[in-house]
Image (cartoon, rainbow, N blue to C red; front, top):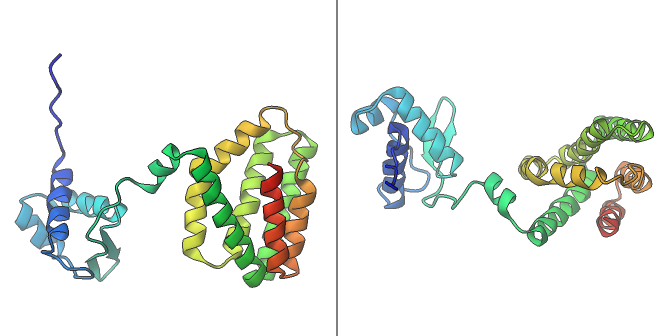
Amino acid sequence: MEKLIDRKSLSEVVADRLGEQIKSGEYRLDQKLPIESELMKQFGVGRSSIREAIRTLENSGIVRVQQGIGTFVASQNAMSEPLAKRLQTAGSAELREVRDLLEIKIVEKAAMNRTDADIKSITAFLEKRNKAADHNNLQDWLDADINFHMAIADASKNVILTELYKSFVEQQLKKSIAETYAKETPMHRFTAIHKQLLDCIIEQNPKKAIKAILAMHDKE
C-alpha cells in the first residue's frame, strides 16, 4: 500500500518555521515578533495563514498574544502535546493525584477568599444537585455537581488554578463521575459531605475544608 503524503497547510508550515526560529534563539524570550504585514512578506503567505500560525503557536505555549500590543515569545520550547490530550491519555493513578492536588488547594483558597456571592452560587448548585438526586435525574445531577465544584474553584480567586481545574473537569472528571453513577450508585451518596464542605467554606476554615475534600476522595 502506498504511503499517503503528509500535506501541511500554509499555516502549519509557517508555524513550524516560525517555531524553529524561536527555538533556535533568533527571537529571544519576551521579544516582540514582527507585525503581521512583515510576517506575510517574510513567509510569502496571506494574513489568514499568519493568524492561524500564531494561534497554533499560542496554543502550544510558544507565544502569547497581547491584544492591541503584539505577539511575544513566551517559551522557546513547545509542549510535547496539548494539556487536553495529556489528560485523555494519562493513567488513572496520575489523574487521581492531579485531582487531589487541585481540589485540596482549591477548597483551601476558597475557604480563605470566598465572598457572599460565591456562597450564594455554591449553595444554589448544591440545592440543584440534591433536587436532581431526589428525582433520580442523572444528567441534571451531574451538571449541578460539576457546577458546585467549579463554583468553589471560582471562589478560590486564582484564575490559573480555576482554568487548570476546568480543563481537568472537561476532559476527565465529568466522564468519570457519569460512569460511576450510571451503575445505579445512589446519587445522595455524598450529599452530607458536600454540605459539610460548603459549611467549612462558609466558616472560612481552610483546614476543615481540606479534611472534607480528602474524606470525599477517600470514600470514592
